[in-house]
Every structure is written in structure tokens, then in C-alpha cells.
Length: 125
Image 1 (tube, rainbow, N blue to C red):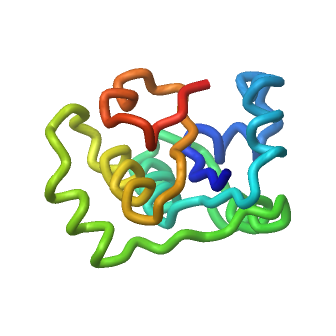
Image 2: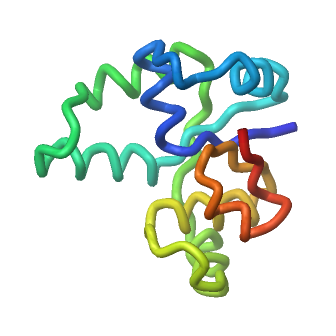
Image 3: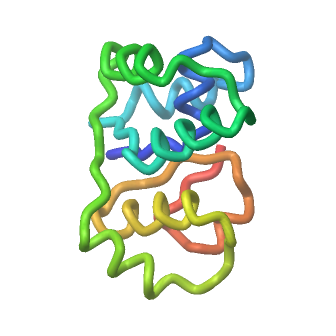
């Protein structure tokens, strides 16, 4: 299985956060490939620039690459899928992650239960 990690997982992995549960670690380590979206790094960068988050974005990106995560750019095909998504979730970054998961296809790993309404592409932990 291929996984796209929701933004919170990127922060948790980089920080060794205890919210990264053994179950989530097991799912991630068993994946054939683990992706990080450019949209997630965009979201983190915005939150850093407006003072909602304190993170060294360059260090975070390097740490995630070193952990073996593969970058997933945002493409025009992703935006076409995004346009067709029902308005179940209002966060534009989460909606893009769902669109990317559907388009690729890969599974979006998240703890955000609201995203499960988008169907089988969303894997809750």
C-alpha cells in the first residue's frame, strides 16, 4: 500500500511526537511508499509565516526526506479532482490531500475523522 501522510503526521514524525501511535508507526513502516505533499509543506510554511507554528521548514523537509518520505508535487490533475470533491471538509489543504490521494491513487493517512466521508482513499488511525 502507498500512503500520503496528512500534515500532522509530518510534524509528529519530525518531532518524535507521542501522538504518532504504535498503530500508525506500524502502518507507515509496512507501506510500499510513503509520500509527503507539497501542499502540506505549503500549509506549514503559511502557519510559520503568520506565527501559528514554530518550525524550521528547511530542517523539517530535510528530516522527512532523510526518513524516506517521497515528495508529491501538486499537479493540474490534482486540481481537477479537487474541483469535483463534495464540500464535506472546508480546509483547502486537507481537500487537496484528498484530491491527491484519489488522483494518484494512494491512501491518505489521517486522524481527522471528518475526512473519512471522502471514502476509501482516506485511512483513519
